[in-house]
Image 1 (cartoon, helix red, strand yellow):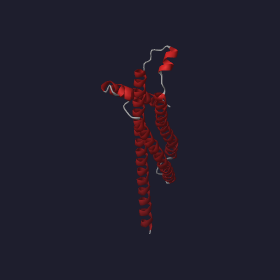
Image 2 (cartoon, rainbow, N blue to C red):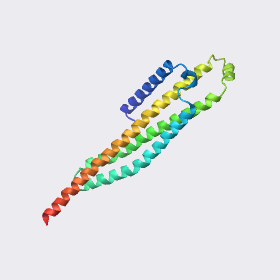
Image 3 (spheres, rainbow, N blue to C red):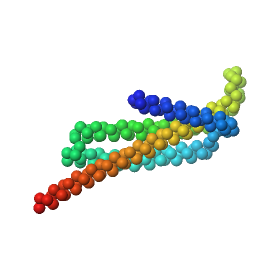
Image 4 (cartoon, one colour):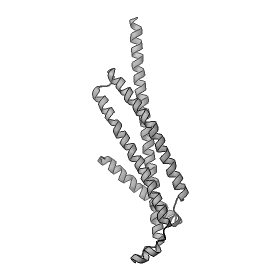
Length: 194
């Protein structure tokens, strides 16, 4: 990961944290109940994990087609071999970014699953054993804060996934138009020779 990616991730985390704190501050009843219900969270993350699988299954054939078009354009002298290599090596970076975003959404799902399990535990005997003055309401606020942060983080990851997919599709359409231009030039040259 480069510095720009790390700064972006940290920024997104702090934006999510700020939004979560703001929501919990404005709406006191969410401090103990949580902003989202457990049913909503599982449906939310299940939906987005399914969307990620759909995006990735769509992405692989698109990337294959992009590589084919790039090779064809390189063979016909439309793009230089150096440009071809640069673009060809960008594809693993694209897949790595998609992998990071998918891993983030999956991690958020696991975190919320752990929170659901922790909510069912009776903490009062544990707190008494260790003589901590942690109240159940503080734990509820922490759970709600964590849930809210994970939802916002996953929204940013989904946005990044979808915007990346649209950029890739736009690139494919550009390559197709360049290839069509090449075919039109080839056809006009061959009809002029007859």
